[in-house]
Image (cartoon, rainbow, N blue to C red; front, side, top):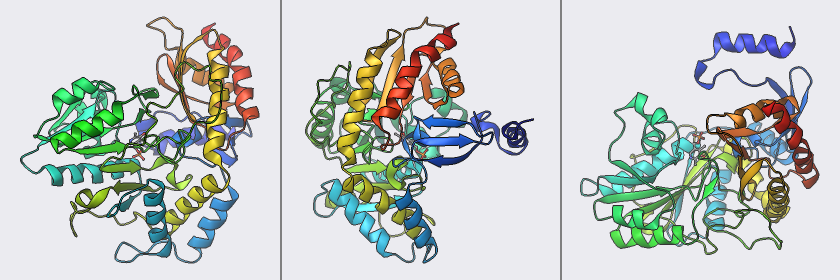
Length: 418
Ligand SMILES: *Cc1c(COP(=O)(O)O)cnc(C)c1O
């Protein structure tokens, strides 16, 4: 038995089966490359699901976290630390937050959305019991975030969940307008729906959502857990930066909106710590920032010195290496390469969050077969549906590395269909 196979047998004996059997046992990583327990090498085009923004074992993250851990790693929220304060200031600055805006730190995306759910309840009280979310939206697996997640198979086994959540079709401003009135506490939107297969909204949708919620007195919450921190080629998908010059051939590579839209709250996590667990909720303006009073929410680990140091290092590298611009360039290159393949029917490139659909019969589960074939060929990718693949590589991935994958795709496709 190879070492990987023996470890997977032990995994099956000792770990809860919620993830199925993992694809490989990974032991080491560097940049956009990882190695498994049997010594095989893979190009990581998933980045720990949009988490490893700077790839694996980035020297600055490694040194900052280890030096922070050897100085002061955890302290509880009875105390604060210079890194926690600096990270709050930096995130508010990047989000161009107005006076009175605040940050709250968590350990994950779902926890950031739990905080946002509580914010919505505090805003709505009993007069505004409703929360509007989008069809195909994903917000996390804990009970509050799950209550806002659309997929029935994720939700229904755990009912009753916190009540009042309704779903409207994504990207449909008129449907949103019809649903939102004075009984709605909040509207929660992913600016690009990641788990749904990387679907942006039509131009002007986020702006319309802002106008609709403002008119009805409801909060607007953007879930940027997957899209935030440079993933889409700007700091936040809801605040696009100037696109890199290009002659884009992608079917849908333009940002949905070109003007920043400021919500009342924004949640972040995945890429924020560059692989170290940390999430955040930012609240914008005086009203949203004073809804949760002392004692009304908390966390033991959230925002500790080690996690906030990791996040500061991540933001520093993104900023000092002009990474947002590189993300846009590599995105354009990838989209052009994918659009040119005859078995690809649509490409949705939002920076380095890229979904693409495959030509396949309805009953066929081609995408999962391609994930398996890609792994055999040394590439880690992900299927979000039977015909849809997702890429979310480290933001530091090079054009040459992406090109290796595009060159290998026809053969991966051929092996998956024969
Ligand atoms: C991943 C994700 C979450 C949940 O984050 P966890 O860290 O897995 O709890 C929430 N919202 C969106 C949009 C996500 O992509």
